[in-house]
Image 1 (cartoon, rainbow, N blue to C red):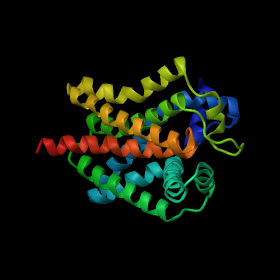
Image 2: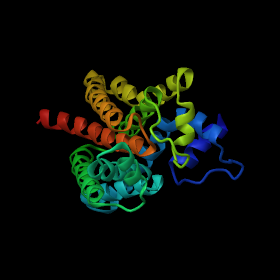
Image 3: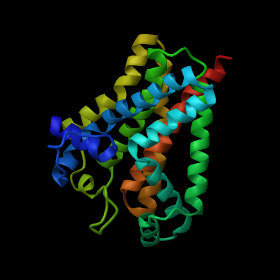
Length: 261
């Protein structure tokens, strides 16, 4: 399990891992169960950065630094996937065209606009969410839950869909070959839901569980969309799913803030 965890950490982040951890397609495939657990780490980095930044700087700068820290920790891995999906589906009209555009390392107009809007929404949502509460377990769990839930939703796509690319060049190919089912999927689900369940238990507010409804609606729509145009998913589709559902969680929390006013 140690090797699988550090394999996931090596693949999904830019954080250092022990030197004895080596890369292999089989290990990468089996390490998918830790994808939501990586969200605990990335969310912890983000909320920790915000806490330190809020002591030293104005709220706006603290939130921005928090976003920077999570992007740095993942190497913009998921943001890159979201940008590629925007370019691919924005400029392609066939499966071949879409996959070709998504593989291009250059960022096009659709990707720039999409990423800009996504990051803007994320910033303003966090500005409404983070500075409005005293730093503590509740704030930390809210921030971390967005990262774990979004990665869990992306993991369920691997379990429910087939891989779209037929070529041998893809960063998600090893994952696609084996998928994730049974106990590994159950473990991933535990890691994905645990922060939200802890938030419900500690706060006594069951309304947080309703956030699973918009997440599942977004998942359902993305699965239909990817299946229609690609016949399955790619690594970029997983990255886009993670980014979109992370924002949906933030917006869900912010909607409760507005209702309470």
